[in-house]
Length: 188
Image (cartoon, one colour):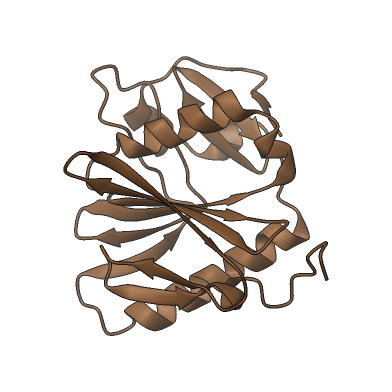
């Protein structure tokens, strides 16, 4: 769940990313959305486990990749004329100066706010360098991939314990089941 921070200051993205988040309040994480600082509640244990598994899997596969590396909780600024938005995806693969793949672990409560979720995806699509957006569902073995193509963004749904999450822009593939190791899903 997210809410506007108590002392919501209207900042630009650069100032927001340079500011120590503790100055915004005591929430787990903050984002800047259209000039408003938005506070996010702490994630569930399942969210944390999936994110930890993701970081391990990406890190292992990119260990000898000189150009790309994983990052957790780094800022991503859409290339809007008004630099009033800074999104903080759960994880990303950065290659050189720009993020190439961004990841969000999606909770059931986030899905209840479809319009906000669609806006967040649109903001991430506007980040320079982003080629893939991966949404990993917390409550079922499912990932949704959005990939930049010449004609726009292409969608792919990846599901099930035998599925592989291909990340062609980073040159790696991750078994979907590895992301859910130690996560109890409702269907189990």
